[in-house]
Length: 214
Ligand SMILES: [Zn+2]
Ligand SMILES: [Zn+2]
Image (cartoon, rainbow, N blue to C red; front, side):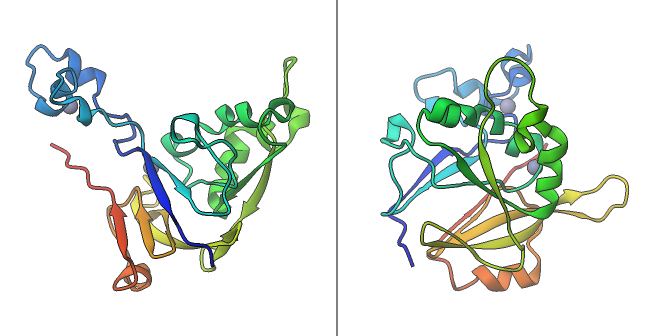
């Protein structure tokens, strides 16, 4: 199995990023975190929306700042807006084969449904309008109970609770992933016991979100 050589956190903020416009413009100036982002000492508190790049030897380069260019795969954690609405922007990679002909996208069955509903033209290009091309994706719907592999690196889906469905009060499931001993869970408020078994004592790095609401 491939070995991870680098993980790059592109964002570690909330879905709305940090700072928020509400805090920045609040006349009461009550949020020290958001306000700190405007000072030289607090600049590190600027946090983009949550996402991460995983680099391992067989991967080619991706984003320019990190010397990264081609994407071996994109994994979508869940169907919320902040997790998948950036998909259309991936067209920069595939328009006219600018960087690559197509991007492999990995997602759970329920996330595939959301993407198909939200971006019908990204699933069926005959539904596109306008003069340009749309992003070219190959979708890989993973079985939440089975590992999948991208260019030699195995990923184990980690099903976690991420709030509830407002209608049924059932837990809404989001996926974290374990790869080469790194367990990454970006959006959760409860980790079920069977998922905990997959990560506890088996992770050399554990990344988990923590969000305090006042
Ligand atoms: Zn704030
Ligand atoms: Zn979410």
